[in-house]
Length: 281
Image (cartoon, rainbow, N blue to C red; front, side, top):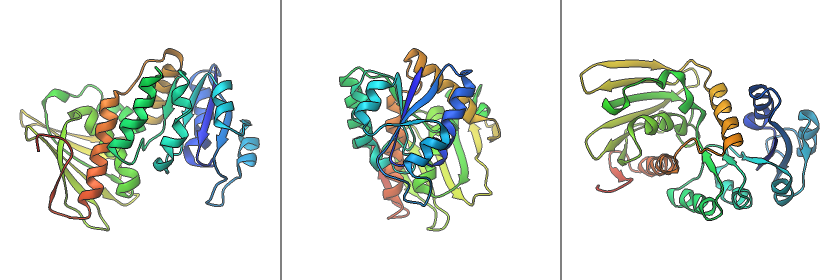
């Protein structure tokens, strides 16, 4: 099975690792064969030609050619979600399985537009943070979670997706409103559901592991530190998606993640004030 990689620029962490990970996960049954990049790395990394030579992938000069030759497509650009709507257009009109890397979109409306293209052309697609696949989240009594306190590394704009993804997966997509409670240096915000459940998210230095205190209705708390090989589990699920076309993450949840992230970034400009994500707030 031949995978085509579409990227804003290659020589970034996901592009550098997905080909080997996918091949290893499938025993060589699925391989990244083609690649297209809109520009060469603006960060001083490998050029598109050099990257393709280094990773043994054939460079193609158009997304149209890549879509035609590939059995399935990965749209990368993990650090530039503003590029996704353009890069996704032809792949999502193909009817072939398409995985779109995190962060899916900058706003809820763009996310809805991207999915609308896929729906109109019967193209199976999904997007997720790999953190959703932490083994530590399996087997939790998700229906009885009342509160989550989550913390992790990195800046809010780029890294909050990794904390939001498992929260939405565990607590549901109907976040009502968001309030920023952190500082410029240490961003933090609270998500509130219509029924009063809450999740708080805070961002710290790179030494901070992804960790959650999960509080249940019966008064118990479970501490979760993500130490499992979530990337391997994610890649295995992506490979199954390519083979079966079975969508792994509901589009409703992805839109909720993006809508909540969008609200958090707005809330950061006006700390202490609620920003509505969804009704009834």
